[in-house]
Length: 204
Image 1 (cartoon, rainbow, N blue to C red):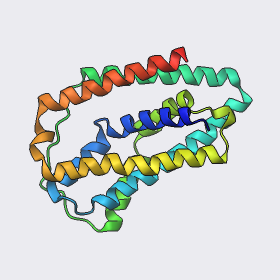
Image 2 (cartoon, rainbow, N blue to C red):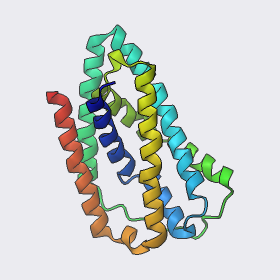
Image 3 (cartoon, rainbow, N blue to C red):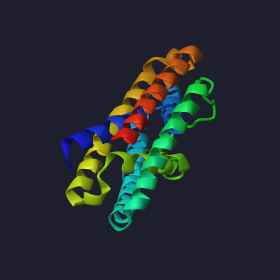
């Protein structure tokens, strides 16, 4: 897998992991309520879930790309359209501040891991995003075992880094995630980046 393709995937994957959404909200809520308690196991669950999704989606789409080139192009442009739609939703959505529920209980490491895993596997937006991102950035028609392992390495390295940063920040900066104006600016920055990525996909 070319270095440029892997770097492009890494960049957009970081954007996806860092974008405000259910996963980030859950990480932040735990951090605000319990600090670092169970954070590592919770983040590990998210990471394993992403590895499972990327494996299923990449292998399935790679087979489709090899057997039906025209279908692959349709999937590619549909992915670019989805990125634009996601950018529009993020730009127009109200600020996603995080409110901590008083009934969030402490949990064992296993429960925290399973909680993160279930949130990732049960989130249809995660699957749709991988369906959009993989065909636009990864050369599926030539993807082999080595390329797939490189993608796994990116996920395993970057997902804990991004979500761990959120957990760390939440445990130490509670006001940050309750500032509606600031969170809206963050959402709009991500929206602009998504637009740029989708345009790059179309003209590539």
